[in-house]
Image (cartoon, rainbow, N blue to C red):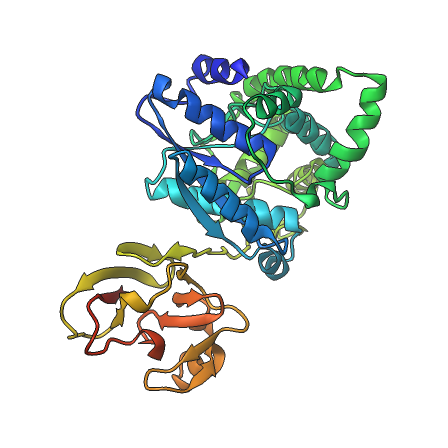
Length: 443
């Protein structure tokens, strides 16, 4: 595991005083990374924080969350736990579980960084993961940009300290230090593309070429160098960027194919499209720019449309942004996009004004979270009587377009408070209340 420290130091992945959030699923890779980073944190002067995200894909996923939190507690490591309904997210967006899970994870990670809870996020990808990524990208039809694989550091935030570490070294480390871990049985499910490569394709190749993983990683380094050089030849000044839209002069499509292809990928990234666009789609965009008539357009994956508009090729991202809310109940201030700011504070008075609510903090369970409405939610009205949340919204004449963006305080499917609207009878303030919390909404 010395390769991890060497990778960190040689590439300046972690600076003194930084707080490093480690994505911890509970499996061998993430547990080894968490343990190792914690073991060198004092020497390199940084803090380690565990981050576990329950994807709600497996029935026993909550057990993994408890395992990770208990381990962190026993070893003096601060930890955050989040739960996201990935199957529901996948269904709503019409994407695979893999894509939905990844989006959910990085949504949580991004939020933690923006909130300054952590400075960087350490991901437990290792050499075998890199080899799988390269093959996966090849099979999807990407060029050199795909075969360079995953970067050691992305966006200055996401770091992969184990990217040059062998899986065998990780397993030996786990055994040597008797580090506990949990098994995720979905890793054996070959209906997932990555699992199919990991469990079926790579073992077959390794029978003939045992060193294929090391060779693929070496190949990715060469691709990285070439890709970086070509990317520096792209002139971005002529891009016209607006929200979810980018315009490229048609004359730019007369450059060499290597530059044009990367120019298109870079333009797509600028409007938030980072995946599921393949080489064939890039060729379609190039053909439209060069040979298409004015007004001609093509539709691409992820609600992306390219249109020939006189002297420009315009690419639009029409996908609606999915906002994820999963915050514990505590004294806090946080912004909810399209809704406003929620302020939770302690108070000694029961006096409230517009958009303010009060509740008894002692009556709020510790696992209560702020989230958006879900199917099956129920609400016990102030003064008595239980209704489906949907019916309560109708009674209160709250427009359907607003119901999905109103934060609710919930425990499972029981709603304790609806921001700016009402609190449940279960948390009402009475004469015996000694812990009054005020919830303020600033629109």
